Structures are given as C-alpha cells and as structure tokens.
Length: 107
Image 1 (cartoon, helix red, strand yellow):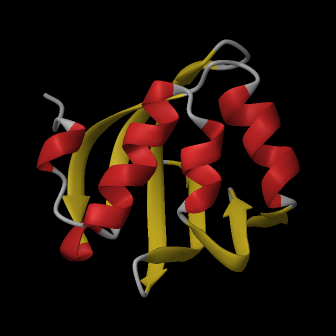
Image 2 (cartoon, rainbow, N blue to C red; image 1 turned 60 degrees about the vertical axis):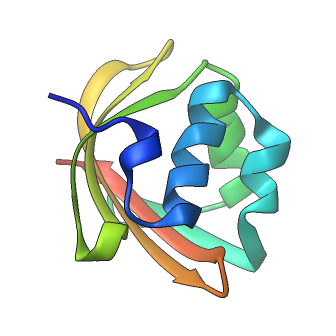
C-alpha cells in the first residue's frame, strides 16, 4: 500500500516527493536550503551530481509506503531506469520550509 504524496504530513517533504515524481528538477532544487547536503547508503555524495544521476537522468520515482518522525522519515519504493525498483529509506532535516539535508539508502 502506498501513501499518496498529497497525504504526506510535512509540506516540504510532500513537495520534494511531488517534484521527483513530476520530473521537475527546478522545483526540486527550489526546496533545498543553500548548502544542502545528502548521503546515500551512509556515504556523503555531491548532491547535484547524485540527483541528476539517480533521479532526474534515469526518470526516478518514489512510491511512499510509510512515514514517521512527523513526516521527516519515509520508507518508499524508489524506481529508476538504472537500478529498477528498490525499497529505500529517506530522512530529512527541514528548516524554515527548506530541506537542509536528506539521507537515503536501501531499507
């Protein structure tokens, strides 16, 4: 069972998922705080490079299964044309309506 993006608790995380699923790179980057950082499977990554390689280049999509921590934690099926579908976790640090950091990895 998935949670529709419109039903996600945190408006910033909701917009993040919506931007990814719409393939809207501009809206995605507008959600990030200046100097935002991210990690994938515990390794720090260059955010812009990772996003283009894992999300926007290969048509990435997120189907949220559960949320926790006030909407700042997600478990989701992430699908892209490079890796197929995998169960992933996402954790967000949101400040002032913008994402300061997100961490993702296989669940």
